Amino acid sequence: MNSLAPSCGANRANTFADWMIAVQTQTENALARSLPAGEAIPNRLHQAMRYATLNGGKRVRPLLVFAAGDLTDAQPEQLEIAASAVEMIHVYSLVHDDLPCMDNDVLRRGRPTCHIEFDEPTALLVGDSLQSLAFELLARDICKESASAARQLDMIQLLAHASGSRGMAGGQAIDLDSVGKSLNQPELELMHALKTGALIRAAVLLGALCGSPLSSEARDALDRFAKRIGLLFQVVDDILDCTASTATLGKTAGKDAAADKPTYVSLLGIERARELADDLRTQALEALDVFGERGQRLIELTDFITHRKF
Ligand code: GRG
Image (cartoon, rainbow, N blue to C red; front, side, top):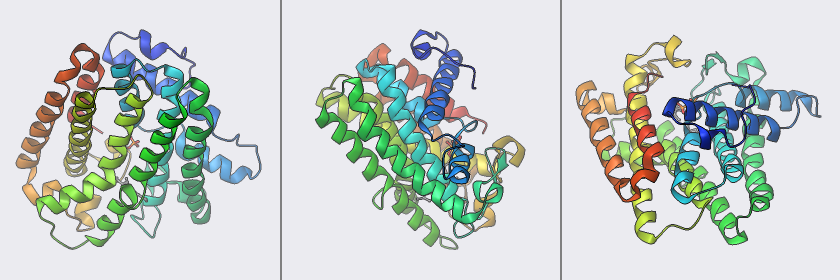
């Protein structure tokens, strides 16, 4: 993934597979440039930040940023900043989630988790530092690429809300509290809309915010899409957690069942969870109708998220 792609590679790619590789490469390179060098003091912390962030993951959130940017003619230079910021928040959440005080996991992205490779205090600081750096990027860099100051504030506010107690961190709190409990479907949906959905929604909206303003009808449609795709991502994640192997996932499979956590599979069974995924895919695609051909990458990404194997 580290071979340098031209910054507009994603724009030039024709097939979805080529486009995906171009965005993943562009994101990897942007992240590598934005993270402090491993030799910079404090070098152990910086090495751990780079270890946790680089060379791994599907980069689904950056892909959503870039695909949504197609709707508004956003420039790749802005999109890569927004994509890096969202991915840093995502990686921070994974590093903290893997800590012994939370999910206590030893494997992530096919490698030892950050606190196993380094140590717990370092992993805690990696998450803190990635979160700060994400906002530093949005506050410092995005305006250089012509976004207005008002738009920049919207982006910062959007990402802050999605990450905090009324977004991802709040969803994680509900998740930790739900162990051993049986949630009903609306309760499960709320937990996932916050824990996983909020950041995915932010990725979509941030991508669109990088370009020309959308009409209010288009904004509402995009928000409907963003919420459906966030939930779809989680339903598929729950299905994979009990059908795919640890080797394929690159993280410990079957953890939710082992930890007695409510999931879509424990609530609905595997067949109805699959039907729910199909319904969410249909609803997500319907929301994109208004965008016509410009929604092509989001349509393809919806299918990628539905049929992903890891
Ligand atoms: C610690 C504040 C805080 C929040 C943690 C998102 C989260 C909340 C924890 C992650 C745990 C988890 C496995 C959630 C299920 C959905 C999810 C986010 C899976 C991992 O995302 P992928 O599949 O991972 O996009 P990669 O590695 O491909 O980036």
